[in-house]
Image 1 (spheres, helix red, strand yellow):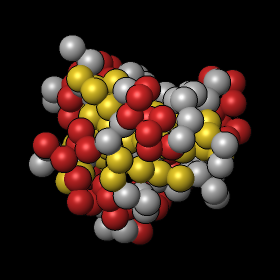
Image 2: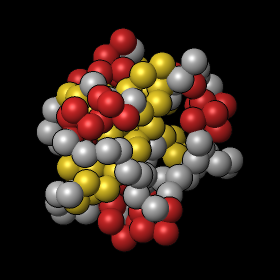
Image 3: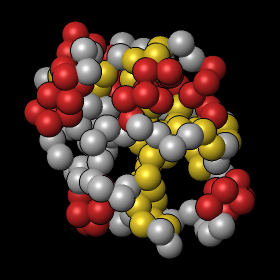
Image 4: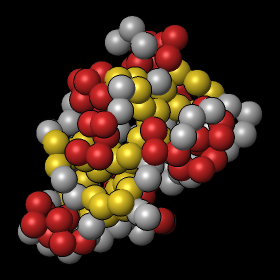
Length: 156
C-alpha cells in the first residue's frame, strides 16, 4: 500500500482536502508532530501487532504506550509487535507509513480510548511523509475499525 492508494481512497470518501504530504519525514510521532505543526499527543499512531488470529492495528494517541496487561486482557495474549521486516508483508504498509486505512484483507483495526480526548487527530496517510486531518468519528468511519479498546497507558 502506498500514499497514492490511500489518497485515492480518502478522495473517494470526500477527504482529499484534508490529506497532507510533506517534504520531510513524518515516520515517528515527533517528526509527524513537527511536520503537521501540532502537539505529539494528537498524532494518531498506528501500531502493528501479531496475534494468533493475524495482524492487528491499534491506533492510539501519540503520547501513550501499550500497556501489556491491558493488551493481554483484550486479546488473550501478550503484546507482540510485528517484526520490522514483516510489517509490509502482513499489513500492506512499509514501516513508518502504517495507517488505519485500506490494510490488507484480514487485518483487524481498533481505535484506542486514548484518542477520545481530542477533537482533531492526525493519522498517517500511507507513507512516511504524510498525514490526514480527521475528527475521531471520521477516523472510526474511514478506518472501518472494529471498535474501541483500552490497551494503553501514559508514556510519562
